[in-house]
Image (cartoon, helix red, strand yellow):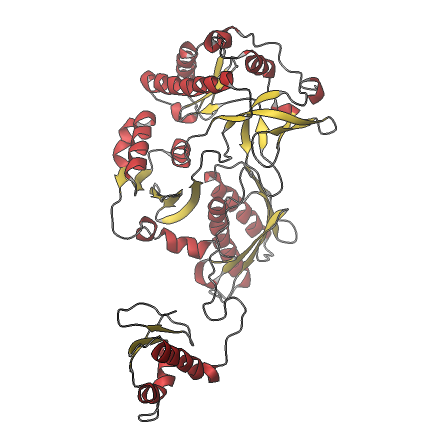
Length: 518
């Protein structure tokens, strides 16, 4: 059965949160914070070479971020000379279009060359982010600029048209190659993506034109100023996700903001006109993430301990060097056979882990300590199952078979920092100290507050909200209860309300208007 995919887009004043749901389960969570100068994969900059490091065959480049970005010689690309000439020769007096068209692409950069023979400190270079800053490291750059669309990736200063290996039909490959080659102007190459299969000429022509326009729009900034600056940015996170994921299995896209709704509809009308109807405006009263149960799933999925089926759970620890996962069977003991039980729990764990990797965008090295299994066939099956589960993951990854200690190693491409969401809240009573006042003194504390509100503030009618346990303590004894004594002593009216959500000793006073008294 085809899985049902929904995209939930929550737009607030300073950020956009995007949740990808598969059969109503949260699979991916992305966040786009407002601000023009956010460092994101796909952004292109005019950078300034700060330091050339011959020992690393690399250089550090200033792109306007607080951390200097890093570029290796092998990331300069085949036609770095053409980009370099274009940067040097553009100015307000030149016709950028004519200059671009007439730049000769050769000779290509030597594979075994040295960085110091190409870059010098102070040189201005066109670069693009391939990996965001993570921890103490700056961004990773490439000088091979590319502009990704839904069906085509445009390559400035290139002459080759490549086609996705996933398109199997030779006739379709020939058709696409001929079509795209005929519509590309001089000094442009392209990669034809899998999504282009079966698309008509009008859709591909429109996309190529929009990508070329985006690239050429950046020339104006380049010619006016040779200062460090952002030339163009990747599309918004929402449109990037749609570009990479949108297929026939997408069911609905719900958006709670009129402007974003129109933008998404406009974008889909370009890349996949027949799917425009799946975009829906959400105008319900409760928050969109609450309505679609995204908030609840975030709270249950991002903790250190993640529950899986029937009492089993995962413990996930992320460090600078690697991510470590421990699989625990917990209280689960469904079958008498220990081996079968372990295998079943490990399979449940693998399912949840494949989801967690995408959800947290975990990258680098991941070590999983599965429950020990003696049966070699079970070990092999678990490895194959994990490989199968990871096939839907867009990040480049490599899964290794279990070691003799029952550990599985996975490497997953890390292009941005791991997503961390704090799912715990500070205790209102202990304020994080782990200690609360003695229960013997609680009546004294409440009486002190009551005395202050009645004698100092002059309030004669109050509502006291407490937990059911504290409520029972304060009202015990028909004539000698604490509440009865306080009413007589302070000559005031006290309305006691028990709140089930309150912690054991939590208590709050409210005035007649229902406002909380501090």
